[in-house]
Amino acid sequence: MPNARAHLEEAKELWVVEDDALYRKTISSLLHDVEGIHCDHAFGRCEDALRALDTEPAPDVILMDLGLPGMNGIEGTRKVREISPATRVIILTIHEDNEKIFDALCAGASGYLLKSSPPDEIERAMMEVLKGGAPINAQIARKMLAMFTHLTGPRNPSLLTQREREILKGMVDGLTKKQIAEQLILSYHTIDTHIKNIYAKLQVHTRGGAVAKALNDHLL
Image 1: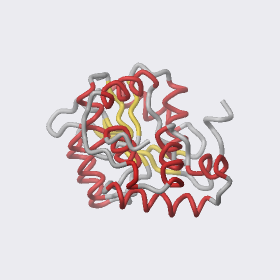
Image 2 (image 1 turned 120 degrees about the vertical axis):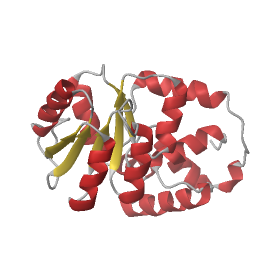
Image 3 (image 1 turned 90 degrees about the horizontal axis):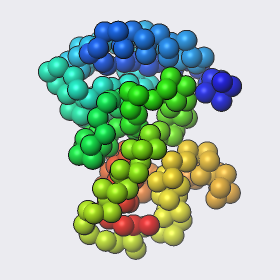
Image 4 (image 1 turned 180 degrees about the vertical axis):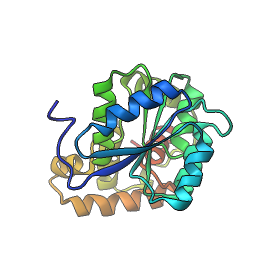
């Protein structure tokens, strides 16, 4: 699988938070073997992962279960993002209901995958998020769109410039910053600056928050 195992400039650190011991061991071993990823920490509870953040360097990505004992994965995601904004969280769960999808994105999740996803899909998702993408299971994406279609909220398309709307459209489509730059024939740094402005205007701090805001407020 050359695409999923594409070389990263340096090895990235991944943590797993999953209460099922067998699944935790399986997914940790799978991802530890992916080129460019180290997975040396796996926890059965959010509380243990949060304590580790006080003493260990923050990971690049945390793969987070939703249905955990004690603090659930949504609240855990929110806490992780408060402690380490640079850490991306991907939710991995058996749940498919709209409320949990919305709550996970609002908490700052960078992606959302089902536990039923095949190993190669999970592997690709890890590499994608490390490159700035936002992997979301296709079935979940359809549910998100259906949910946001029925939400109402303030509509102010003029809030963003035409260029910012083009970039936001790329974000909604799941493109990486590099892909958006290539599509619009702009530099990576220009795209990065526009995205920071988009976040400021929409009053969000994550890609998932910007996408949710765009769909909820019908900005595109």
